[in-house]
Image (cartoon, rainbow, N blue to C red; front, side, top):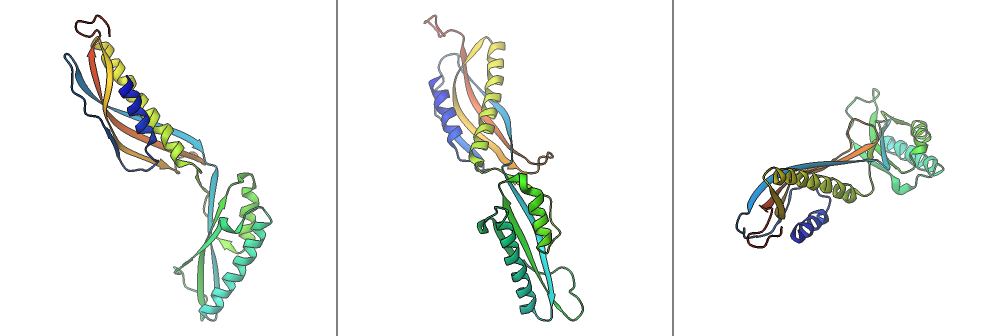
Length: 225
């Protein structure tokens, strides 16, 4: 099964992208061997170690410049208050948006979307309070992610391959054969979901199709598998 081991290692080394991947080995069938194509699936769940919070800063003023200046002042105060809670400036960013609601009559509205990256989730309540105190409104429920998506996908791929291997072994046993090697692996779909239904969980899933070569229990003329 040396080819199988090498093939598995290559499959697991594919980066954590969500596009389909393929590992293919040309292999000539020997007497009594057959190819069995099997689908396997696997998933791996990890608690997210990064939380993302977002909300909006909205300021109305007599001019666009004044409204922007008000948001800038509020943003700088927010950065300062979050810094006191251990959130650095690189963990905070802003994005100017078009206003979807009318400003106060005779005024101009400035809308900024504010994003905060949080690594210490034990301070979630304090961070939300700081956002609210910093004139951030419409704060969205936290979104979660992991720092190492590649590792998460590697575990999911390993489980998908193991799932297909278990099926191949079951077919081989039923046919009084053995799995001799793997000649092809196609990753048909994979991805990472941060909306798994359980708050804070990040789920990687992988689906593969693998060509297994099955052979007779004993090699012809050798008396050995």
